[in-house]
Amino acid sequence: MKLLFSLLMLGFTSFSYGQTTIQGSVKDSNDSEPVTFATIALYQNGILKTGAETDIEGYFRITSIDSGIYDIEIISTGYEASKIVNCQIKEGVITNLSVNLEQGMRCFEPYTFVYCYPLIYQDDTTQGHVFNRDEIRHSPSRN
Image (tube, rainbow, N blue to C red):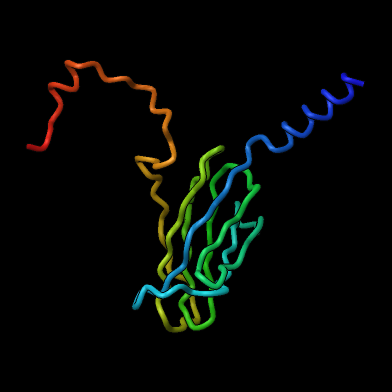
C-alpha cells in the first residue's frame, strides 16, 4: 500500500514539475487606468497555448504553463493591440508583465515589443555569493 501511495505521489510531483506562472497588469497609457477584460493570449511557435482576461482592476494571472519562449498578445476593445515577442518563461520563476495600451484602433498588425529578460528578480533570494568584510569595505558606497 505504501508503495502504491509513493508511486502516486511521484506521479503527481512529476506532472507539476517545470510549470510556472505569468502575471501582470494592463493599463491605459494615457491615464494609467486599468484596462478591464483585456484578452491575453500566449503563443508558442505560432500556436495558441493558453490565455486569460484581465479582471476589474486590470490584473491577470496565467498558471500552470510550461517554461519556454512565448509570444504574448494583448487585445482589448477600443485599444490598439500589443504583442510581446520572445518572452522567456523560466521554470520556477513568476514572470511579471506590465503592459500599457494605446487608445485607438488599427486594422493592421499590433505593436510589437521584444521581451528583455530582467537582470534582477525581486523574488530570487538564491544569488549564492557571500561578501566578506574586505569586499564590503572596498565596495562603492553613498556618503
